[in-house]
Picture (cartoon, rainbow over the protein chains, first blue to last red):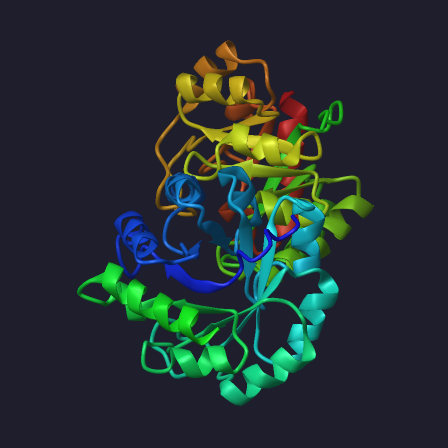
Length: 209
Length: 209
């Protein structure tokens, strides 16, 4: 898929059924200004995960928000999602591209300049870079702070979503270092008012760009 | 994929890294006469699962044995497998067919005549029927014994693989009731000599047909 011009920027919210009920959360953060939604679902079997993806995708589409499925190329395709996001332990970007052709935006989590360059060469459409700061959302994250983000920004041209421990207090610093998008899970899922939390973060990103 | 004529019959062995080292086991059961291999891998992340699927697929292809990947249509496609096997909680058969077109044989686990008829209507190439007998390999199995196998056999024309608690002692009864293939995990993975266990089971199936 040719990435829709200008749509890979702003607040990128990951919804995960382990953390919060995904559908109401998706609706709230869209109202709050999220531009991209990712469903990360390691809990449900594929059939239930597909139904959840279809429901979230419908909400996203109605609002002009991009919808990305984590890890599973098959579920992303079956749900008619805009894209798939792949970690370093998921299917390789090139394999996903061979399956999906231009039907999906493909994002790839990277941690080093080398991984970022490989993802570009393999055909990724955007890069994840993190973890920017310590986080409790994922136990397997490797650190990649502001300095690493700047290195990767200087090395590649693709849109970058920074992830890991980003809050309203540090989001401006992350955007100033070169991130096009900031991704959050905990900062919004754990907020007493997720819509307001999204609105605050989205405003920081927009103000800094 | 048009199912290769006459290849969906005989001994169908499921290899699972939770149960035994898959690659040596695959080689042993192929020597023992298995005609179909399925990789069921709920343990590894997708990248490692793809590498395992590629390795087993290579062994199977060299021997003219069909290779099926459980659950993940994307890994089956990326590995160049012959097919994918879907449970009732996995992606729906119709969704898998929409993604894979004719590139994959699609198998579907069924437990009732109704599920079997739906799988046929949705485009499955073969049906799994079970659990025939009590088994410890899967905790979520519903029973579907010899009588149910006969009902499904009478209702649909697709090749059937019977699964669940099948051993050399009861395999003939299962084939006589209409199964084209018998699937085993524990009966082979737990055997002191998996090749001999496969040879014995394969002989029972071939003798009964």
